Image 1 (cartoon, rainbow, N blue to C red):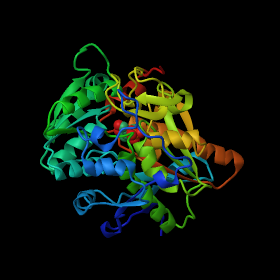
Image 2 (tube, rainbow, N blue to C red; image 1 turned 135 degrees about the vertical axis):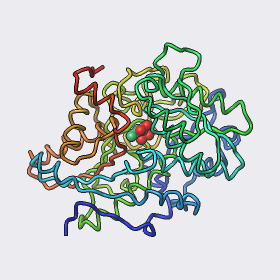
Image 3 (tube, helix red, strand yellow; image 1 turned 30 degrees about the vertical axis):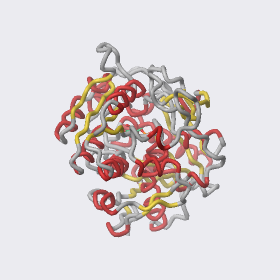
Length: 419
Ligand SMILES: Cc1ncc(COP(=O)(O)O)c(C=O)c1O
């Protein structure tokens, strides 16, 4: 029997999320209040987030149960398949065995719904009727739109203007799920925008209304927690494929939720290398400073301990809109700072070259964000070939690129520039 695709049944879906906080190499420094610069407490966060999520943000329990209503929704597309990329391996002539977790089959086409449904659930359970959020490429906005419609909530999405203009079909999808989509920054119509500016718009909106909370698609501890379901399933599926485990786990990294989702369950396995792939035009982990910085551009959010390019940094409008964030999750930053995780950066043409090779061997069209990790995986596989070593590589295929065809069009016609 071929081991090229390992599936789990719906009753094998993990019923608890893995909390990495108790096993981080060093304790996480707390978020600081933007005005007082003192550690924030639950009351400071309550205008924006429900208590259920605030509790998860600081929990030190090693496992956190997934509520039944969330599991019920997750089974619409989970467990997701683990696929061995045998055709890519053959094309590379590598002795490495390459496995990917395919998160592209979710309703929104990426990993983002894993946390969207959890966040909508906890907000609805505490009586919230409307959520606001930011979105880069539109993946997170579509995910939250889907989740809100499932729980009967309204949703307003502030979309980075560069992506709003590059990817109109994402907006159509969000509107189909009943959301209002507004290009950001709202008060500067000619500005290409950034995730930091869109967060400012969304936070400002939510802070002004009692029926409204804000939802963040990445960066925060509870978001990475919800994504650990990816790595937990992958661990079981790799075992069923007859592997002892991965040698290297890789993910592309914008705010860190996709990378955290696949990698955090492997943090305790010290022999497993963990690798972040980011754009060289927004190189937070590879060239950023580790310091306290704001999560948004205007300085409304708490200060987080993270690798950052500065909260006013506006990255060039590359196609991987989900990777254009000035900072990184505190959890990911902690792992990189401690040397437990490595980071590499690539210009966008090199990532599209890798994405096209993947599409021609494995058949699936990667989201531009996923092109970054595929570039890193191909380089790792070629290094294994050079060393003549049978390494097991595991990565997250975090989304399809079927709504990013304008990016592929630019690539095919030589219009992509490496900013
Ligand atoms: C497909 C895809 N992958 C990766 C990312 C990067 O975000 P994060 O690092 O939080 O996973 C995004 C963000 O929008 C995305 O849409």
